[in-house]
Length: 571
Image 1: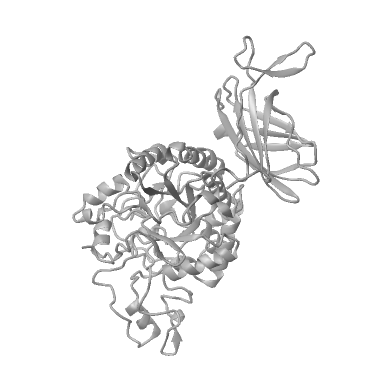
Image 2 (image 1 turned 60 degrees about the horizontal axis):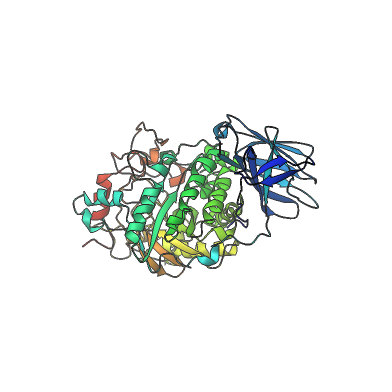
């Protein structure tokens, strides 16, 4: 959590005394005007040569269609970068002006922005701020020596899922129950996806964030309850998969902060919901893209190079962790890909490193991360029992098979446990827990192997015995043959906080063909069953189901297949 104290901004008033000095009086005194603006300036992080700061400006005067805040430093501080405002500096004087998306500042309204700076010697808080030339009063929030926020990490339980029920989304439950045989799983808990700004208040007649939290309180009763949300709206979202592109352009980090994360944080922080355990899955498929799909790799995608260069994935994840981590009953789990993406040596360590970078960006610390989640919305088998990574067949290692392709991990459980150790080595807390999304990785039904494959070759051995029946582990869209996996449960294995259904089964990964929509979601050929592939799936067929709707929409045929192929089987 960010180590700052909460600013209590009092509306003070100033009048001139007989000697001309200004002093504070009761705001209720007759004939006295309120201070026109207040400024909350906090140093969030500070090191030997630099710092980050957050500024909140509150307008107590007439509404404004634009604004400009100025201050001067007593020392040699230099602003090096900023966000949510156009920041410039001339000598010791800094000017922060509105962006186009936050120009309107109502009476009593506030706007927040931040920046990074350098300094040497002292780093004193500016004494005076002016809004459009008028002096404000300032609350100089403390810096990194402030005491921890109330309800910091120590107030959280080690595993939020232990001893708790998990929220059943009534909207998903109704869709599941309406399918033949769907009542068998309609009471299972699933994640709620906040995949655009409109979802916060409810889009297309669906429940909004407060609606879900209010329903969670009803379901909670007198016990403990976990409610799960997927935070999924980064600028330039999912740079390698058009089906899950989002509404925010690559450079709209300001909108992500002020229009998406800040409103979510404000709702989650409502004391009304303090008794809930709120689990967030933070920005799936973002950070690993910066490792695997950039630069000179054959898997590189130009848009991923853009996101690596502008830093907005790292900044966005850091900001989300920082803000949401300040809420004492929020448990942040960062998405960590899956074994068929990150399991190779040249991906494994670098991915942990970039996650540490994001977890210490924009005022976040590793204490804002409670754990990580793997296999979110993916299909990787939980445990392959018919062969091991150490097996040798016909003189060749299992790692040499076309399916394993030199990966060090065969399944999600082994990957999640090993990646947890790597994350701890990278600097995360030794008590972090892992979640594994088992919503669609059961791979049961008639095609499920009952034993090892033939030992004719390493490929016949692996292909004949593997549960995961995809053409390639890089296939991710509406996979044919998939089934429901392990039902959600707490503490199922060492280092694993829970198996979860974070992706609601039956909600599409993407459309099979171009479908116009107002959600910013494009058409990805990986969702087209006729597609012959690309370097990211070793040029295999996509394996996608036909006639799928856009991502997040109900896909009845997929749900029925998932029930049919469930493993463990449905009774």
